Picture 1 (cartoon, rainbow, N blue to C red):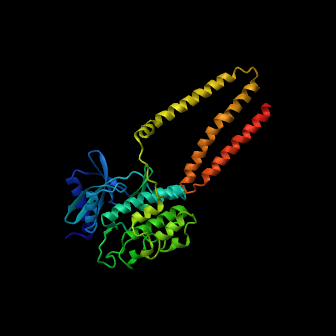
Picture 2 (spheres, rainbow, N blue to C red):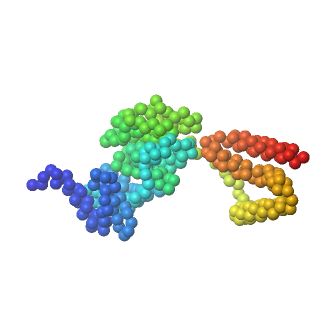
Length: 361
């Protein structure tokens, strides 16, 4: 007679036998205090072995056949009578929850990158007919400036003829209302959860109850209407697809004109031409500095160099600062700031030219 404790360990014993049979060497648990997920190694490559249920099996098989770039790749699916394992690539990084706790609220550009990366994964999951159902801060990993969606333990395949889910899963505060049995979950449920995640990143407030975040909505003018629509209680009022969501956060790009062969050649050569111009500019300044030593008085040398710098060097420096500021402001959609920066650049140069002119006279 097998004791209850031994019976509970039987799937884990079978899991270890499966891993050994397929030449995977256990390295240790991924989470302290839990047997699985388990770090395993095969041919010097480290993977993550996870116990999966019968409901998760077809989803794991789909992800194995059609990998999604910003999700762990399912390398293999192993089966035994009482246990099933998925072998996935290891995402080296830390969770979005840890990132938020460490650095605090995200700026608009960082939030947009999260939205783009997870939105692309949701779009590809929808193409496979899969609903993730547990999008939250701890299920998004940060690695090499990209955001990876992990953990398919709550995922399900969408079925058109069902009015609600068989299993009610999801994390309180992040799950859409339909996760609690009001309707069947679909891609719009994942968009709801992603909206909650983005709001957390902007406000630093992590919800602990179903509707907690609705009273702490971001005040960001760009993101507020997007998040309001994504987290609408009625699924019909949300973005209906991940593609629609991505379109809302991505400005329409103008079609690029067809370049004639001469312009194509110039475009290819431009990096080299720009490098030559910068080297020429440096040599030009070296000549000016050497020429300034012809003045017998040190004060005259300083005045001459200052005047030349204000007229020739300062506009270049201000232009680079201008572009640096614009690149960051532009990510927030404030395009008109570029003209204020140009005006400030011109005013500074003119004032300094006037000042040095009065001094030299």
